[in-house]
Length: 169
Image 1 (cartoon, rainbow, N blue to C red):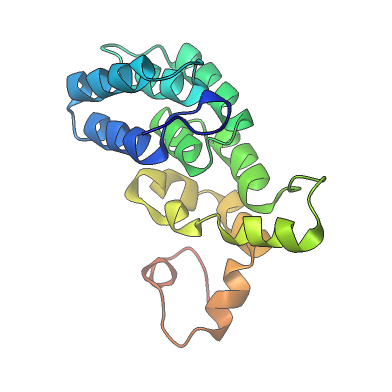
Image 2 (cartoon, helix red, strand yellow):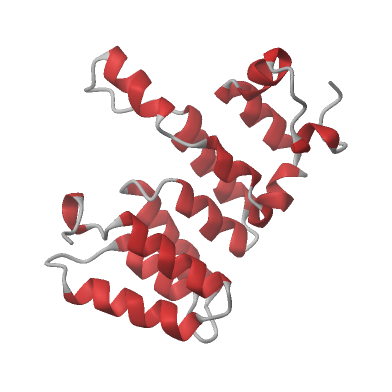
């Protein structure tokens, strides 16, 4: 397996490390991160952020700063989980706006930019770890900007999220 762009770690392995940490298996998560690092030629902001998140007694300030660095180099939806883990909804929504609805690579032709936006899976927004974000008033505004509310209005199935008290549809 090879590192991704700019020395970033292979996505599936990083996700596995995250899941190990979430499952209370921090030692295994940190060992996996070290194995990934041993194969890389460049530092990885995402690995740093995940490692700081699942360190023995994580320092929220250092971990959040690491997530900020990772978010700038395409940490994508994993950064949402990092911000949520530390309860920083302001950072979470700022990143979500950039990731889901913000300007996309201005150097790309419009068709390629649209294709890139469609690759960003909004399902992450509905993971249990983001429940505090869904309860925040900014969540529905984000859903509107991303186009989810328009989709919900045309879908004959009622999503679990809409069955909650968040949106009067």
